[in-house]
Length: 78
Image 1 (spheres, rainbow, N blue to C red):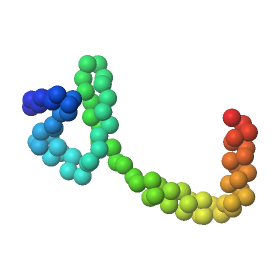
Image 2: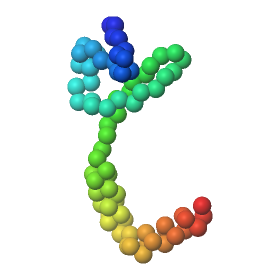
Image 3: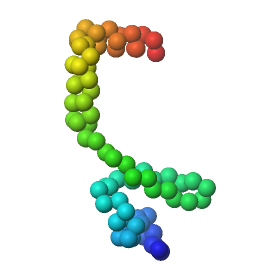
């Protein structure tokens, strides 16, 4: 299928191509060997990621003191 780059450097992807990606809103774009490559990406809101991290910390039984000590160690090592 043919598509054209606009004067604003935008490209419209044909409906037929996007039918294969019904729940995808974001694509990672890269250039490889003279071709443009689009890869579907799942974007998770930061609040959801942070919630999962907090759940993991709680399930591991880590305390605020444990986290503070880990942060101190990591900053000292850098």
